[in-house]
Amino acid sequence: MDESEDVPKDFIKLKSEKLSVDEVSELVVSPYCGAVSLFIGTTRNNFEGKKVIHLEYEAYTSMAESEIKKICRDVRQKWPSIKHIAVHHRLGVVPITEASVIIAVSSPHRAESLEAVTYCINTLKASVPIWKKEIYEDEYSWKENKECFWTNSEK
Amino acid sequence: QVSVLYFARSAELAGLRCETLRVPRQVTSLQLWEEIVRVHPRLAVIRDQVVFAVRQEYVLLGDQLLLLQPGDEVAIIPPISGG
Image 1 (cartoon, each protein chain N blue to C red):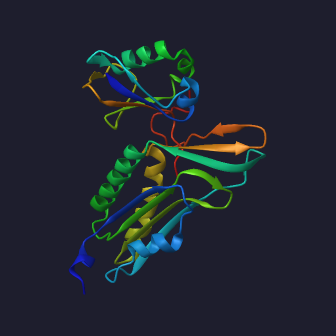
Image 2 (cartoon, each protein chain N blue to C red; image 1 turned 30 degrees about the vertical axis):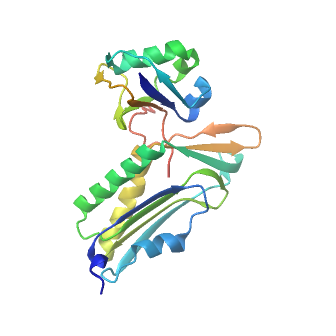
């Protein structure tokens, strides 16, 4: 068995091509792990009664990658048994039902990777500089995550 | 001279994504915002919703003193919606 299999790795990618669940889960698979947990964020076709034609994502790419790296570092501190983490986020136009984000985490037993995936997506929504524009038939809207740590929606 | 990056709604209001601006080396984040709004008055409407990222660290608009170096990146960050 190759020594390099032991080294935990983070796989972070922002790309405009269609995301692949197979590709992302294969990145984190490890012979030392009995669990791979996955989250897929897909695009809904409606919002408040309006038909969504598609989504468009943009990112402050360099900072988004470093913020995702910070999330991976935090995950490894909270759940030290985590082996590999993969976060792929799509940029540009994302058609309805296609994935905008895929997060995969592997660990020896399932509890840690399930918790880590939840933590990853929740923290990503609160801190990673990526923006989503929903395109409707007649208009569009820049979305705002309720997790965004500086917006006070009670104002 | 710093590089100012605009994203999402702030890029639409400012009409551009990137520019260099001459700003004082020592300035509070609120003062920096006011300098930018002087150049792009349409940004004023989002003042309560944005934060900065200075050298890729988030900074709230307020009294925090920024020590800016030539070539530093300052980004206007509207409310995020990744994931």
